[in-house]
Amino acid sequence: MINTRQVIDDFGRHVYGVTPRLKLAVTSKVLDYQAAFGAGSRSRHELTITGERGEHRLELLLCLPNIDQSPVFLGLNFDGNDAVLQQWPIELLMRRGYGVASVHASAIEPDRNGGAADGVRRILGIGPDDEGAPATWGTIGVWAWGLSLIRRQLTDYAHVQRDKIIAVGHSRMGKAALWAAAQDEGFAAVISNEAGCSGDSLHRHRAGEDIAAITTNFPYWFTSGYADYAGRDDELPVDQDQLLAAIAPRPVHVGSASEDDWADPLGQFLCVQSARKLNEGLGPVGFHLRPGDHGLLTEDWLHYLAFADTHLSGP
Image (cartoon, rainbow, N blue to C red; front, top):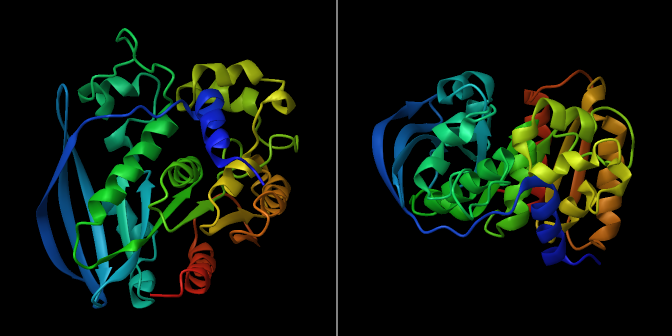
């Protein structure tokens, strides 16, 4: 059995950066509310985060079915909340009794080098240039922290089933969802869709993207020391099966695609198999492989709905 606390500490030091302890306040106000798809409601909320150096605002999209309380899939998105309404099967999810909550990831911290200067970090009193600041806190770590902040806010909404909030993410947002759920036991489950390298695929299975490639292209996602393992992936003190196993006893599901070679489908499958052994059966670790390439499709969501129905006892 793994030492969960040690695993989380090691991932913080070596991969995503250590999440700082922060003092802040969060308030919410409704921007608009309307019926959606005939299956529920759609609302937008402005979240105001107040830190040591001012305020930062996020827009939260919340879609809830017409039932008293519902489980909610919470995930960050790439293209803005309007795009989520087109790209995610919201009507299907609501008709199955699940809500959806989403925030544009770049509203938390822009997905680029230097993005910290324009994101939430600028008001938290921990800028990368501050003396003693955790400058190695990577952007994936900030996104994961943001997911936890939003989860806590969702527990204040009357129609959200607060003990059934599911972290979900595709690609880099899958990495953030896994890291958020590992640190925050308030998430009931986590869905990682094709997160690949540094997410849901094994480093020690040398295929697809590796540490050298990901830290060359996206160095700001991680702690600065992560790049030191470029070309030495096997020497990293942790591997992603440990992260998946650390989430137990809560359910984890990994989605893969047969043609998504960069995410290494075989490495994802081996990661799931190993995580099942590491957690000694304390929590389900699901897996599916669909035909096709990198993407979050309705076919994937159908697997996630079935998994949630089974392991969260349904809506």
